Length: 175
Image 1 (cartoon, rainbow, N blue to C red):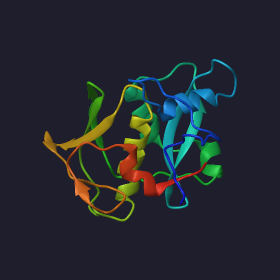
Image 2: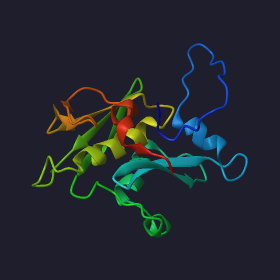
Image 3: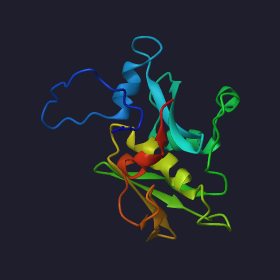
Image 4: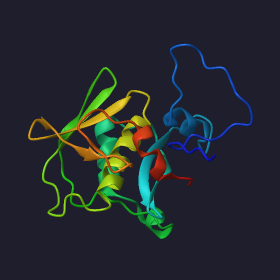
């Protein structure tokens, strides 16, 4: 059986986790920093029809709104040369992300005419996996015109409830 996750490296043996703590991709990314103490921003981009965690060194961890802006801007030149793309073209995020108790809400404005296209699940997966890689975000929900928006999960089901990276596990590929 093969298990995948949002950029969290495998380990050779189990390790204890303190009660109340929760490992996350941000912690794993910071461990894999290019130099000690250099934070790493995690963005999920598309490659080979899947979601791949891309690590970008940062002076400091960006605010959640800035991280979402960078995700929406798509891959940089180096990432494009490495084959990364984005499925977020045509999806408009309105306003900024709101976080309440670890639950993030993202407002979606206009959606492309072909809503329901095959890469729409990748687009929402990019946002969910990127935001839940942060220590301060547990779940992500989407709104359109102030109402819950039904979005696709990796299994092709639609939900207007809170999403986590686990909803897109089947789409996550190794870097």
